[in-house]
Amino acid sequence: MEIFTVKQQRKLLTVKGLNHLTRDDLAKEIGVSLPTMSKLINDSTPLAVQNSIYQRVNHWLNNVETVTDE
Image 1: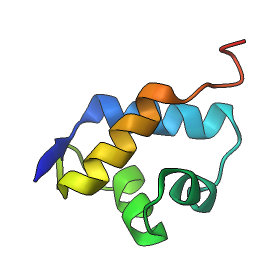
Image 2: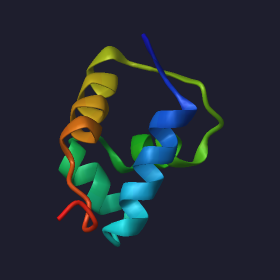
Image 3: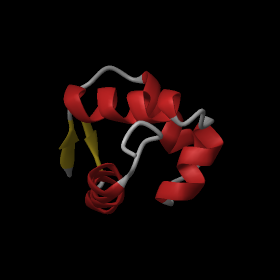
């Protein structure tokens, strides 16, 4: 298990908003289920998540470009 932090949750929500992405869009891009994405967005952090989910989300957050990155 890994810990999904407040900072990671805020970045996920910021990127979601700036790029006008839905929870479904994020889930598909990152490769997690919609219920998992909903938990990552809505549940209180810090949040314990499976290693594979943490790695996918963390990799995506580190490589994502927002519309303001240009």
